[in-house]
Image (cartoon, rainbow, N blue to C red; front, side, top):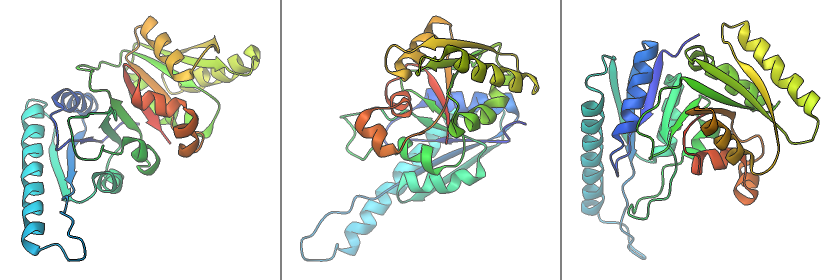
Length: 273
């Protein structure tokens, strides 16, 4: 199993060269095609009680085309030395919807973490929404990250369908890692049962050529923060986890692992739903 196509979202509002280079490096590692993708949605001026003049609609579309051209230029400049086969896809329309649709052509989708940026007027790109809609594993790169090696990987294990899929989807990355830790948080104070579950993942991965070890962590706070801290203590620059085991509304209201990994973690995350 490998990744034949890596797709990376390119922002039209701000440069993200580090993310593009990380995507290019992953494509190179797997001998994959690298696809840059972007969309820009025109912001039409509001005329109360009257249709928007065609000239203004055209002006907004022309501006969107210019933004997309700039995004493509940044993409090609950032990855020109990658040695990968390159492809570019773009559209005028909602970026989240476009990327969700086009992700059918990807094996791995690389996105920026949805950090708040008060300097950008346009709506934030829907990385949260894409974890639900893409149907593909997603590598989330925080804006403060400038390199990613994946030599040490922490798997945040919980025996759910989403976590099982995340581990399976991550096998190509895990196979290239020097160390893989299956970390299960003992939420219900049943350490033996929790260890047995994590240990079976170790056996499953071993049959696929991936060496790993299991650890059980006592629960003491928000799971995402606990995983992030443990990853830092063990030199892991990637956390693998299942995405949105609860409803997205519940995570938004109460907090949850997926929301916190997307919005607050200090390292890359690999998510599957």
